[in-house]
Image 1 (cartoon, rainbow, N blue to C red):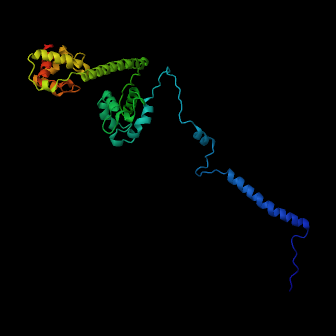
Image 2: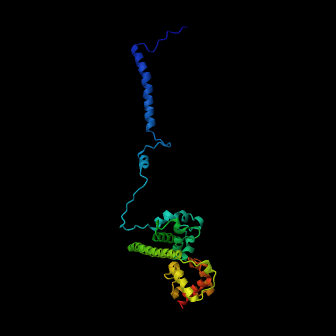
Image 3: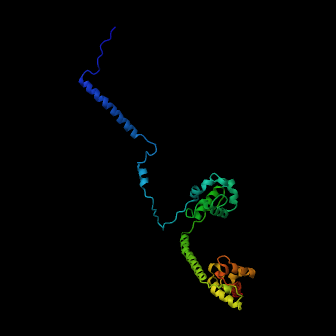
Length: 298
């Protein structure tokens, strides 16, 4: 049995043209649809959001930021709960390193028994593994805010402490006003210290010949002379805590000790005072200067 003749599917030129166009058009259409599909899907790979508005805004943002606040605006203090959540929860929620757990009356009972003042003192100054102020600084949280956190935790552990009194608005201003005054006092002390150092630099140094010689015939006069030339640079004004000349109250604690001890301080130095006041005067003259100053307060 023989097979019939085969006929080509394309019989006319029009069909040929249509087949050629379809051979190009269909693959191109498929590629375009795949590209659109891929481009519209969510991409989670690294760097895929590098051109998003948020990413671009972060990259071009200036390094420094200016936060303008009204200096006259009233300070808004954080609540005890806010401070607890920001600082204390790290240890007190889980009881890390022996910290009393938040809300556990058994843990807080012995602490509450010590009183509010003790709890606040421990919080501000640290105790055991707990650092002072929970590791923060006074610039981060004020004493008042730390106190609020202490009351918040203690009261949730069974205490009935009253909410600490909020600082008076003028207190901060008073403290600021007091700061320049204290700075001025410190500046005065520094000026006095500088003057004393300058005076010591100009102290007349006894020659080695005089130093090796015998004690001055008039010990009292020698003591007064050495005081005038050396000791008064500090003792006249009480510079660097030196007892003032003629001030009985300043000299009283010193004179409770034996005179040999007082002589020893003058000869070998004590605190900010150098040996022999920075001179190389004979030991006898240094002792005479001590006697001269002591005689002024008796």
